[in-house]
Each structure stands twice: as structure tokens, then as C-alpha cells.
Length: 326
Image (spheres, rainbow, N blue to C red):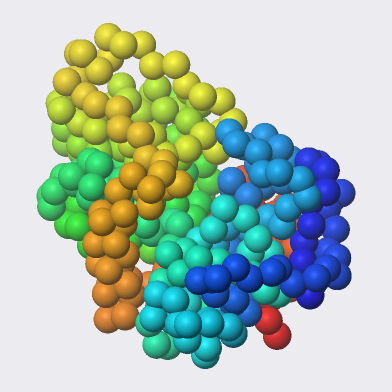
């Protein structure tokens, strides 16, 4: 089969597409023919060996995928050949085939394109878990979304609206702000401008942010926390800016505010029942059309490097997807 193989941690230009043997199945596992794979910020870090944990070399990158079950001996988890699924795994999705445990996949509602499914689970589960299970976002509250045009940012906008919040998108370019507004944000601000906090204060009538969804990090995180409302909740989702911020402890004291960590990788291990409930809610929204996931650009497998390069640029809109099956 064809697969992207990381033999040494390196920039994406040094990673190659190779012909390798398909993965071996263990009892109780499923073999999936991969149709599409989502490319996220974490995938890029893993390839370069800069993520918090390192995948043992060699490895196939890619954590989120959509595909068709091709082998299911004993029908583990109730799955059988021909069923369409979407899944998440530690690695292995940038390949024509992947072998996973049944817990790694979820049935795909009818009529959902592989490109949509491959860019759905990680972003939208992160958003719903963060906003609902962690921040307990309520209808009518003010939600500030940083990095609003990225994959998790757009997901947070859409989920926040479904939960009844007023959503203000923060992004660095006019194109990104228009993108966020087109996908549900009530207002948008440019957080690269010196006076952006004054603009935000006006937009909230002086109230501030009840909840901050923050996949960005860096100095912008500290500035955003200074605009949090009394008893506001700041969701730490990631550090796309590269720098991990240092927040003065007097700010949570003065604001009555809380920092809440969101680590998607730990949810299936530590809170499997919560994940199951949230995935049921998400797929229900997906099936009835209330939720329309946003796909960025779609690339052929041979062009996987371009998918990573695009994802890593500040101009990226939505989540990049690599189409595996023709």
C-alpha cells in the first residue's frame, strides 16, 4: 500500500510517500480502507519530533480519518465490511489502509462526504467538550474565539452558536474575519491591533468574555484573559503561536476567573462516557443538518506536503484534508 512514512523526525519536505506492506491485524481489530485524512497542527509537530510525546520511528503520521471497513473478523464492536466510519488514532492515517481497535472509530451518518468526516471528529469534539463539559457555556453568554479561522476555531464558533452563545471571532486578517463571520460568528475583531481589547469591550457592552476558547497561546492569551468577565472561563486548547504564555496569578484572583485545560487525547481514557455522549450529540447535529462542518482545502495523497505547508501558514482557513481513495 502507499503510505507517508516518517523515518527520521524532519521538516515535511524531507518526508516521503512510500510503498510498504499493509499493517498486520490482531484479533478483535478492524481493517479500514482510508478515503480521506485530516491534517492538523499536531500532525505537523509530530513529524518534526516537536510534539509533547514522540511517536517511535518509523511511523505513519495522521490521526483523523474516514473510510470503509474492509475486514472485521468476528464483527468486533458490531462493525462489518462495507460500513463507513470516521476515526481517530495516535498515528497511521496517512495511508491507503489502517488497522484499529473498534473503539477508535464511530459510524458515519449517511450522506456525509469523506472529506467532511475526516475533518470533523477532532475539531468538533474538542469544541463541544471544551465549551460544554469544561466551560459549561450557557445560552446568552459571550464567547470569544481566538484563532477563529482555524479548524478548531471554526468548530468552536459553530458549536458555540448551537449552544446559544453570542460569538465574537478574533483573527489576524480581513479574509479570516470574513471567513469566521460567514460561518456563524456574530462579530469579528482584529487581535493584531493595539486597541483590540477596547473594541471587544464595546462589542460586549463592557461585560467581557464569559468564555474564551484559546488554541493560540502566546502573549495574545494573556491579553485575552485581561478581558475576561467576572467568573469567566479561559479554555487552554493549544499553542499554535508557538509560545506557552505565563499568566500572572493575580489576574485570576482579580477576575474571579478560571483556566481550564482541554486535552482531546485524554478524553477517551479518562472520560469515555463523556466522549460517547458528546459524539452522539455531534453526530445527531451532523445527521439533521444543524451542523455543517467546514473543510479547508483538499489535496491528493501525492500532494501531502502541500497540505502540511498550507496548514502551517497563517493564511490557512479551516482544516486541510488529504484524499486517499480515488
